[in-house]
Image 1 (cartoon, rainbow, N blue to C red):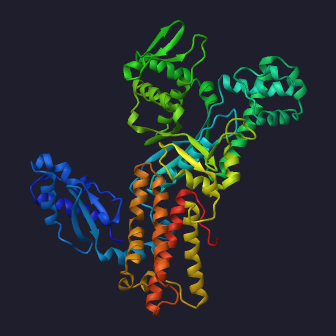
Image 2 (cartoon, one colour):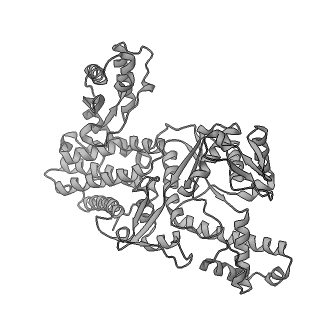
Length: 552
């Protein structure tokens, strides 16, 4: 398929140079965007805004001069000016001729590119607290993080997925003490910051089956708590892995915080910051001069009792990440970690690391609603809803798709009733139904003895109606959309694109007869469009980690 963007960028660069605006201007400097509405074209370019000052011309005047030089050709159907000075490009017929062949040829690879080839990403996401089961917030992290990784891979990047296990500190000791309290049938032993969910009783029940449980309970406190801690952590981590696998998420590495302490990396991070002159002591505690880096207050690294705060191991962990040689580090955390992430970036900068390589994505909170009312209680956790409970109720496909209906930095009300509905009001059902409907059309064609459709059998003259052309435009822009989703760290764009494609497909097969059209040539042209649309919907759902059923 013609490289549309390369062609248009080259033509724009030629026009800029011909106008005498910038003799060194290159195609690589041209920014192309996807308009929100097809009425505004297939691609848009804001180049006139960027060159206006240098040219000493108003952006609209400059846009008009450039547009005059962009004479239509096989790729560029026409150019219009919108938004004051945007150059809006409407693609020529050659693209609609080529898109069906491109989809057919690439198959499952259609939409994949090489714009990020050579880049290595480490993406840390989910990273649930190991002292309890994964909850709905973790589900949102998984539903965003995994499709993001898939989009990055589709753009040609190498991606490693990592899960950080906070298996050090007082919280895991409190978990062990909470389990012990149940083992001894004495709730008064649960510490103030202990854990009381039903899952703690379940963990205690399995601990009771340990062959050496009597010796453990009779042993000295240090050994007893350490043994119960490891048993509880291992059991909880296995439970979390099971939930993660149900979400169709895989991790390459489960990185344990304890390994940072055991290897000395935590204290090495402290010494590094100290050597940079950004550590001071006050009332026995060791502080990081965070205010020197724009923070609202300085932050404690090591408490007066010698125990590190959350900040120091996190700095050590990210230093470890840097030293593994990735091009980009992406850390996906909840909104409750926003301040910590700001401090982390400051500390890494103070330590001499390039924080432009670190991207922090904040995921906002989730409300579950049923019957318009907020759902707050859990059978096992007491005050939250678990990831497993959500998946049990609405299924994996709905869980993943619904969380991608909003950008991660937006609060989200998850409508449980809608997620379970088998109607076209349910977004995931609507997209999956469109895929199944296209599969049904193709199966019906085979039953009628029609040959398998191919791009070669499609005639452009048969696909000039508005409904067919709208589907073609959606198919043609899909690779650009995937690239945009990867570059913008926005896999939700793919979910919305699938919804829009499903709507276009619905309008097409509602308006036109496919099998049984007026003549065989028209049948085959429309079937070729059906086959291509089905393939692109399947590819898009695969990027989202959502199933593409053939029957519903």
